[in-house]
Length: 263
Image 1 (tube, rainbow, N blue to C red):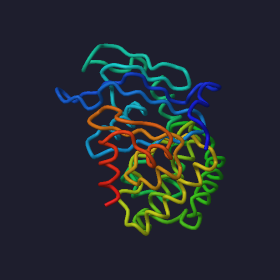
Image 2 (image 1 turned 135 degrees about the vertical axis):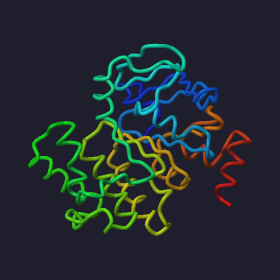
Image 3 (image 1 turned 60 degrees about the vertical axis):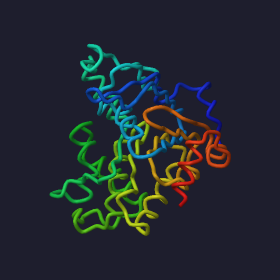
Image 4 (image 1 turned 90 degrees about the horizontal axis):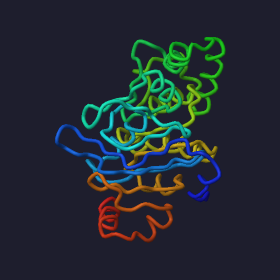
């Protein structure tokens, strides 16, 4: 297992410091720090409403935060305004950062009027303006990587949930991002289909890809993570390497959470 201190020898892909996020009067994140070193997997765990998905969406700048710092490969997001009026000051910077942080959502979000191959090719061709022939070769490569090369010409409705989520992962990979962000990628799937996706995520972790993973699957978090963060009511209650966090939790809240998820 790689050590989390490896970030000392390299600029982390994502670094978040003292992040606060509110929806009106409801404060969802209350001063959260997160570091995703290159080639590491960071998992976010916690009860529903703890702020996990919100933190992930702030990483990808899909949500504006009210204070705190977000850096992508050492470059700080530039802001204008304060408090609830704070927003990124440079939309071109946001677009550039976001194209390097591919997100895989709980729902697959595939275009129903496009084939699986067209879904995977869409963003690199239209957003990055890459050569379609080159993109098609890469798209077929990534579909093969996730085990659905034979579904390239199928429509999303013809695929199982597990196959659709693997297509969504191939779509994210085809952007060739610096980091992959997973928001509960298996929670909408039946247990049998869930294992198809878990297998792909484990293979990506073994390749040394930088990933931030929000998950309810404690076994997955334990198996693939270099660092695990347990969020409770918008704050980091406990964090550390998975063997210690799952094997010797230090706080009553984490012990209670792990006991409940194991039930």
